[in-house]
Image (cartoon, rainbow over all chains, first blue to last red; front, top):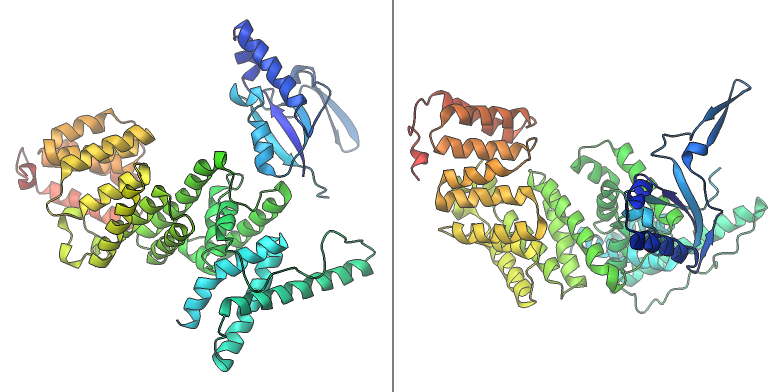
Length: 115
Length: 400
């Protein structure tokens, strides 16, 4: 199964900023560990939602707005692709993503064609 | 065994095996349904085959093979290439593995919504029809059917595995399964008997599948012990409290069965939440009730679950042994402001203390939070009784 793992930072970035240097190193190491997990294809690092630009087209007019489509707190913070046997394996990897334990979350989306 | 009983016994097993072989819930369910329909047509005429399970499995497998062949022919015509599935469904027809455990773990997977877990478990393991499940949960059949379709789609799309979880996940996942069965039982406890019976049936099946787990035994024991009082919990549709129930009408066979399961759980070294609740239910069935012991067990349960609802139950037991004031002190420490039983418990304790005005306020708050039905009528009766009471200590119940 191919899963697209969507990371939401929620309050994780703020909470991580308040960690000791030692703990912050652990967070980096954990992300590194995720990237090196068999089956994981990392994506290029995703910038902050503040720097996002959202484009919509209404009645043929292109509307460009500053910021993410949803609120800053709900914005996607990162992505990676995971090839795994089943959802239990995906849940295991998701639970190792630091954002998940610092107030953010990881959403597991099976890769599928639904259109 | 009647035809219904055979169907009842075999449905979950046949379906589980088919899902294991086919790897597809819908295909398996359709095939099983067809096989059972053919059996319902043939068996009354030709007699029940010597091995009904083998008959059902073989028939269902043949139906599934036909279906796959048809789908493939259709796909070929449409120019689609289908290569992921063999036409012949392989199946050893002399020995069928019992894969009901795999099935229940799939149905109760945490990636599915709780409502979907319940509906799937009742449909697949319990063999209830969508119509029966919808009626039991008082929701439209269409809603329930959609819920099942969505759940089955997610199982396939998200890769929810069909297996007994590995050791490091087993405890947590088994607890989820037990929670689903308990939820079904609780839904039934409010008077929908068929759900209570269904939950007990599922609990029994689980003890067959996992004979050495004390919590599985504890859950079954607790359900049997609670259910033994079902006949006396209502009188003419009105709620009757434990102390006022006619003990001679309690189901002694179920009590004995529940206690036997409880003893086995203890022998297996059980001291988990369900075993503790079974211990409490067992003590409730004794005369006189050992309230001190019940209070201690609730204390232990609070320690395990950190649940304020458990703490509320402890307050009731404490009130019985140490008096209403001691119980009230615990109740007043709990949050639970939107929980109707907090207010009805508080009201009852205040009533016993003769603090009529406060009792009335608490009963009113409980009534606000309670839907129409026997529980609400019970609160109304208490309020009417209180209207005829004035001053302190006029209630004989205040002096136990």
